[in-house]
Length: 147
Image (tube, rainbow, N blue to C red; front, side):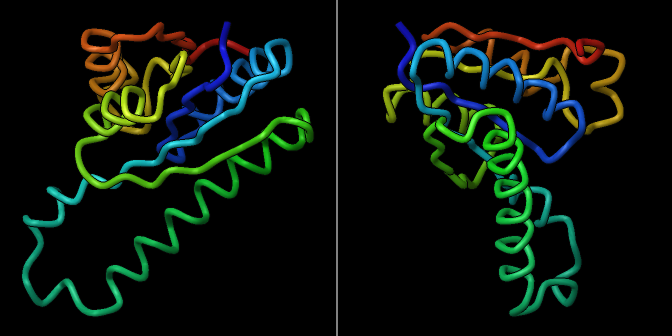
C-alpha cells in the first residue's frame, strides 16, 4: 500500500518525533523513506545586502547536509534495512512538500504537528496545516506530545 513515504524535517526535536512512526510504517510495508528539507530563502531577503556573502550559500548547504544526515542516521538506527533518499528543496516548506509528494509519486506524508517556530507550540504548525489542507495523498500527523 505504501511504497514511498515522505518525511519532512526542519531539524527540530518535534520533527524528529515523526521518524519512528515513518520507520515503523516503512518496515511493515517494505517502503522507502524520502527525507525532505526545505530552505525558505524568502526570509533571506530581509537581511542587509552585506550580511550575505559568497560563503552564505555554502553555510546553508552545510546545514542542509547536517540536518538530513542526522535524520538518515536516526532512521538507520531504528532499521538499517530501510531505503532512504534525501531531497533538499528551496522555497516555502509546505509548497515544497506538496510539490515533491506529487512529482515524486509519494504514497503518504508523515509529519510532526509542529516544527521549530515558537507559535507552532500553541497551534497546529502552518506547514503541517497547509500540507493537510492541500495534499492529494494521505497525511499522518504526529502530535508533539507523542512518544
